Length: 344
Figure 1: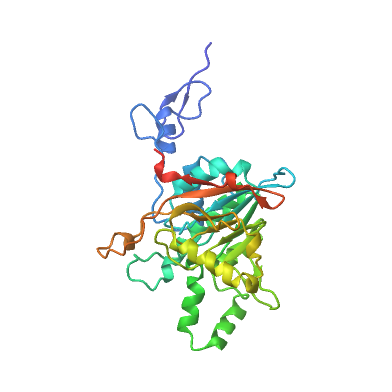
Figure 2: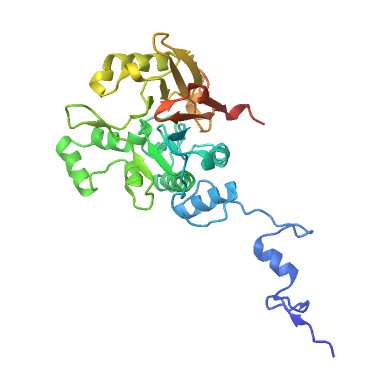
């Protein structure tokens, strides 16, 4: 005698042998809405209101199977060969997530060091400019934390150069407190950290992420807006660009102030800078072979870019830069601009 069929525990419909529920109830629970039972993709609200939601949204976008941060990758590269990926200005939460996911998918498995060249976060929540639509602080930093954890998981070593946007919180605190003693008091209460990107980099949950600290000779000073790797300088100088003027100005700064900064200008063969949101690569200084590079951005069009005031600046270009060093010497033929805006 055949075994009787069971019933669905949710709607009491008759179900086939071995089934735990009917198809209609199953598709309803996973979010399908079409008659042919294709599974509909869940919609994530924007703006995101928590870290968990930000992490889930990013994971779905890049097709990640893990639902939690699992730490940096365990990867051993070729000895004396270092491949560097320069991640440009992101301005989270105004970053371009699809383009960033494309960068990670292409470069993670073949990169030794990822250099985030500044303006990781926009810090729009504390902006003094009226051009911006306000974003709550908790929303901004939920998305920033999620993005940083995915980058930490993808690359063996991540070095963050602090940009002007990353320092907005400390600058606003200093501007609104009566004097330096008040700032010191707040620092003492916050563990010495006023900018959230510093707190994120110091977190034990991101062991392979660090803020750069370039030492200044004969002083106790360090700077966080530039770093030297081999014969290359990576920096976020606060100078704007019109037809390569920004990179030339920064190169002149290095020429004039390199000794005071502890940088051997004559040994430099590559200068890579962020901040301008432009992409360019120009051979420079015939006396010593050198490339000047602006590395673009990976962020959306901001409201101030579409104002009626015409400033004359170049439009932003979205992409990134890669290069390879051998024993600290940059192979200039390996320096490449990846223009993501030009792709379909």
